[in-house]
Length: 308
Image 1 (cartoon, rainbow, N blue to C red):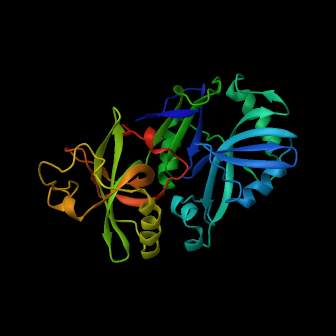
Image 2: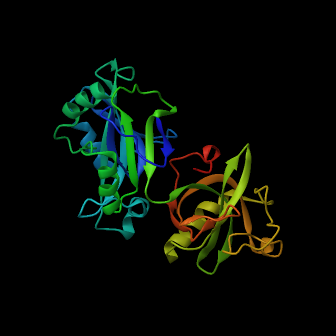
Image 3: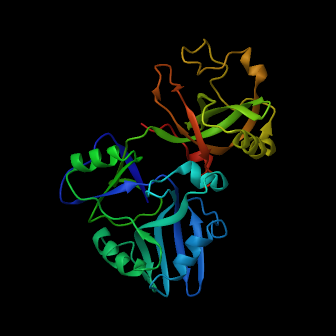
């Protein structure tokens, strides 16, 4: 179940607020002494996060499906998506799983029950397992927004206590407020450099067509440039996948790609996504001051749209 984007949180006792974590959405599936961790596009993440697997084995349930987020946190509990992507470069971070919903428990399907009931059961299942509980945030919508903003966190999720769980649906019963401008984009090409990738060309799907959003040069380290190049090389293609390139005129912020600059680029099949942080959308529909945060192998590229 997904959340709609809003520009302010709804107010009222019927709503519950949670931190929007900067990580990988996933489900823990426990069946006796076997555990799987599955991403939102059904990739098996179990081997990648052995600490989460071990904690899930200690859940107080014979069988359970727990919805949550894999997150890398520092010593102060602050999440980092880059640390989750590149754990070797961030040794001070710990991988944890924040649980926020319980979908099945010991043979019972809980998805038709209200969130308030599911959350009450989740507390007892998580207990002292090592799986962390995403605690509801207390206060008014304004107080919660300002508190989360002051901590430099990505945003807030608001959910109706009465909401049922509808898999694959994005509805008004769950909404999200983003305090940090970032989203996933599809990689359609890149400009090579001496250390690997010099810049990524990213976009989003609109009506089945891939539209160009901008060039991304910031946020890379030398090893990241090499890693991203290695991931893109098997996807190289002979033609540009963006329907609106080359740009008809140069962009003030350098976001466009002229016909002459097209010769410098390498094109790839639009199958891989990246998480990008940016300051704003420009008037001509390009990203201003975009920075690379990491690849999103947990999400399918075809479903990526421009978030508004």
